[in-house]
Length: 67
Image 1 (cartoon, rainbow, N blue to C red):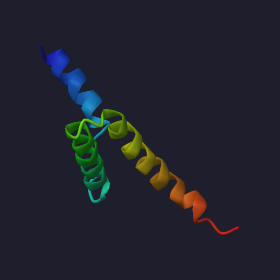
Image 2: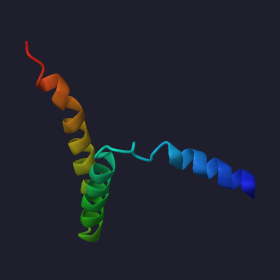
Image 3: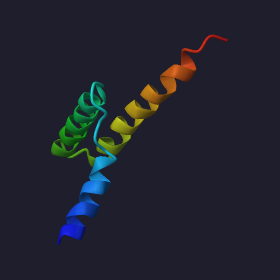
């Protein structure tokens, strides 16, 4: 039983936000956004919209780079 607990904790540790960052707040917001779409029976949008937001956030440094 402790091996299962240790393996689960190891998997979840990879998804915990770093201390002192806003990463946890962003992930919570995306989770709430996805939950809202699911509650509104718009399940495909629950995957598309948060994913598009993450792509947009990830692309910002590239888009803002001076040319």
